[in-house]
Image 1 (spheres, one colour):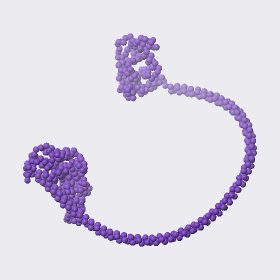
Image 2 (tube, rainbow, N blue to C red; image 1 turned 180 degrees about the vertical axis):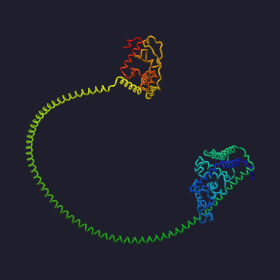
Image 3 (tube, one colour; image 1 turned 135 degrees about the vertical axis):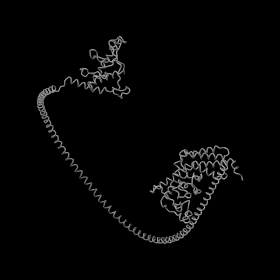
Image 4 (cartoon, rainbow, N blue to C red; image 1 turned 90 degrees about the horizontal axis):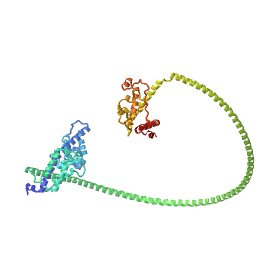
Length: 633
């Protein structure tokens, strides 16, 4: 027999040891997830049971065994109540929990098991309220885990089974754990291959696949990718995979691995043996039940056959008697029917003969009556013709007499109509003459009344004018107030740009005073370089040494602000009439001045003034270029 040192020298044996170490490292990496979620599941079920039953927090039950909470029979545990090897003592008989905690705990465990079949053989119900690993064992395989009490004592297959069968782990994993092929099922298959390897050998290809699958599980993005235990295991797996030579293990490590492998093999054998025994017992029970059912079926079938035979004989005998009775009744009925039919036929023949005779008599009588009616009709027709001829002759005479009378009446009516027409014309002439005279009299009277009313109205208006006619000063003041309101309404705003004609802004915010320079119009054409003085106030623009200037022309390029300047002049003129006297004097205006009025009239809106503008342009151009006559033409 070769020693373990010789086994370690072979490549595939070396790979098997690597695979076993990889499972051990992966199990350690899953500790935080499995142990933590199992603990949270146990606490969650316990608190929900207490809350549903309105029990005090911390209430537990240690009086119930697992057998007490399962009815008999239960699939996978016991199959026959009379010979149950699971409920084998009075203390293990099914009953309800005194505190009602364990019954609800059992139902909650079934609810979170993906397949609804917890492994009741593994767990102790009296520790459900205090030990979370007893709850976790409900999701492990049914055999081989009854004596494990913690995560460390549970092998890799048991840990993976908890994650596969418990729906609570779905919250911590990114893939669907109920699918047929997942990272968990692949890890479980790796454990089975290594655990059940008869020669403890693994090829290089299989080993690479094992490492890839285990690494994929430990780097799941939802929880394990950020778990310290899992990431430490990933690093160790990477180091183990990169190690090409013989593993640097001590004798104790090898013995530990071999012992663990032997333990896994023993567990597998135990599971197989227990499964075989359980299967044999279940098969024996099923066979026994089958035999009992077959014997019972045979007896019931024999009894049913005998009963059916007797019932069939009775039915056949009764049927024969009924057939004979029916034959006799049918023969009697046929005889009676035959006699009745013969009587009916005979009676029918007599009726037919009688009907024929009566029909012949009726036909003869009807024929004679028709002949009499026809002869009488001929006589009546001849008589009617004579009477019609007489009536026609009488009618002609009456029509001629009526026509003559009608002509006479029409002649009389025409004469009366002519007479009435003449009388109506005479009456209309007389009435028109009389009405004309009456209308002329009424018009004469109305004119006199109108003249009198007109004189009275003029006198009244003259009196009212003398009483309420405003003075010229008041009319001027009223005109100024109207101009002020008009300017403040119409000239208070202007468009920002010709491109934005619908966007207006207040004039006092938008207005920028233009650069106005005073020039002598008499020297514009002769000296273009004449000295000019800037005008910085309205007084310099509109006033001279003698007083207000008669005419001021503001000349400039398009878009330089001439229109806004004229509008601002009107607004400035209107300001003293809407502010206090003190404010107006501070701005250079005196309200006491008479005759200083401002009228703003755009040339574009007045065709007459537009002609004046054209004439002024011609005049300026003639001064500049000297061809006055030609420009005027």
